[in-house]
Length: 296
Image 1 (cartoon, one colour):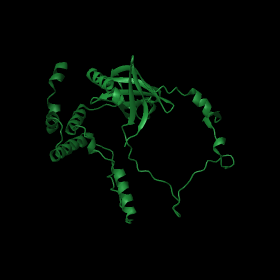
Image 2 (tube, helix red, strand yellow):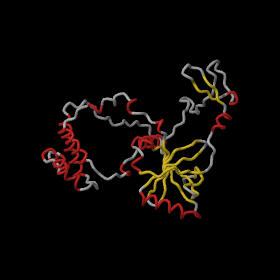
Image 3 (cartoon, helix red, strand yellow):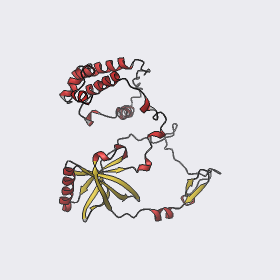
Image 4 (tube, rainbow, N blue to C red):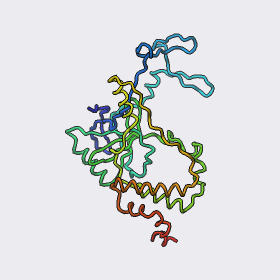
C-alpha cells in the first residue's frame, strides 16, 4: 500500500487546498546484497581515513567540497541546516502555462496529489478548471529540506505533480560530442519520404502494458530456479551483429516491407490513414500533397 510522503497545501491566490503526496511510481528493481563467496556472510563497509586506514567514528567525519586545486572546504551539518529552505508545507503556484510550453526533458519524478476528504470540492474545482483551460501549474515547494520546482497537471479529474529539474541542470546539446554537426548533414528527399512511410507503418496508439522489463523478469526467473535447487545456467539470446548500413534506401524499403507484414499479423489500433499510407511506400514520392502543391 502506498504511503504518504508529504502533507501540505496547494496555495494559489487566496485559495488553500490541503493535500497529501503519494509517489506515482513503484520501482521494481531487483536488489542484491554483497556476500562472502566462501561463507555466505554479508559484506560490511567501514569508513576509514585514506591517510592511515584508521576506522573513523561518525563524530570524526565532516562534509568537504573539493576545489579545482584539490583542496577541500569543510562544511558542517549546522551550517547547511541554516541555509535550508523553510518547510512551509505549502505548494505555491507561480503561474499557469500551456503543457506544450514545458519540454519533457524537465520532468523528473511523478506523484499523486490527494485531497483531504473534507476539502475535496476545491481540489476538484481546481482540477476541472485547469482541465477546461488546458493549463499546467508551475509551482515550488519544500520536501525533506530541499526546494523543488514542479508542475501540477489535471488527469481525469485528478491532479498529478511532477518534480522538475532546474534549467541550469540540463546538459546543453552543444556540450555533447557528435551533435554539433548533425544539423548540417544533407538528407535525400527520397530517403526522407521513405522514412516517413516507415513511421506511418509503425504508427500505433501507445499501450504501456505492451512493454515490460524483460531483463528483470529473467533475473527473477533465475533466482526462483536457483532457490528451488536448479543451478542450470541459461544462456541469454545473442543479438545479431549490427553492421553499418551501406544502402540506406534499401534498408528503409526493407523496413517498410517488414513493418507492413508485421501489421498484417498483429493489427494495432492505429488509424486508417497510417495503414493506407504504409500500404504504398512510393505514393508520397509520386504524388505530393495538396498542401505541398499550394505552397510550391
